[in-house]
Image (cartoon, rainbow, N blue to C red; front, side):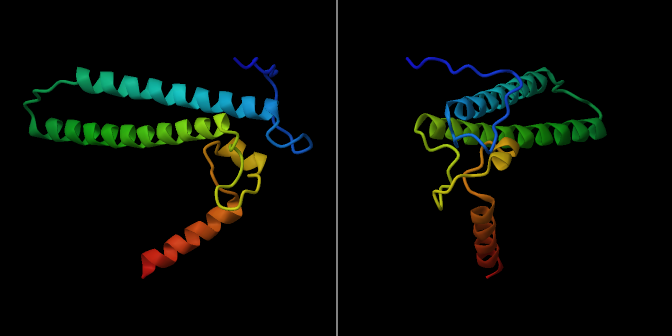
Length: 140
C-alpha cells in the first residue's frame, strides 16, 4: 500500500516543479475524486426526484410540462454518466502513470489546462488539430 502524499489545502500545481510529481498527481487525483463524488450525489438526487414525482397528473398541460422536465433530467443524468466515465478513465491513467500526457503526442498537457479540465487527454494543440479533422470529415 502506497503512503499518502502530504498535500496542503492551499496547494496548486506550479510550472516550476517537476511535471506530474507526487504532489501534482495527488492534487489531480483528489480533484477528480471530488468531482466524481459531486456528480454521483447529483445523480442520486435526480433519481430520488424522478421516483418521487407524481405519476398521475390529470391536467394535460401539467403532464406535458412534467414529461419535459423528466426528459431534461434524464438527458442531464446521461451527460453526468458520461462525465463520470471520463473521470474514471482519468483516474485509471493516474494509476497507470499516464495522466497528464497527451494521448496523441506524448507531450505534457499544460497544468492550466488540466486544472481547468482534469479529464483532458490531449494538449490544446492536439485537441485543435483533432477538432479541425473532425470538422473536415463532418463537412464531407
